[in-house]
Image (tube, rainbow, N blue to C red; front, side, top):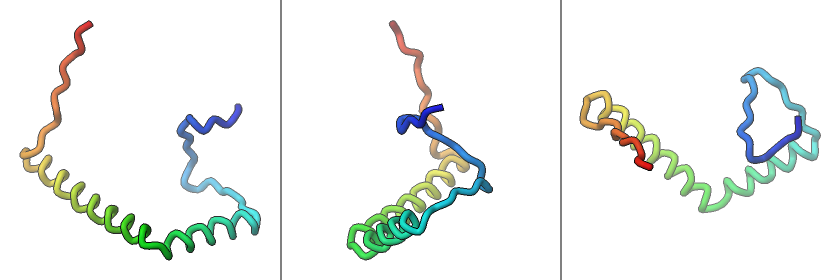
Length: 76
């Protein structure tokens, strides 16, 4: 099987992947560089906002206030 970056792949949670020291340092340094930017703080804020919205949606669905959109069959 050939790798295709247009395909979504999956693996088991306990599968192991090995990184070389160079690969590990690239990941660590890229993460550090990003976390030291103002944009990273925006990402965290958006994630927190999304979590609040998801919670409100979940509660709204449970209460019956929010309902699924009924899709109509497409006519040819």
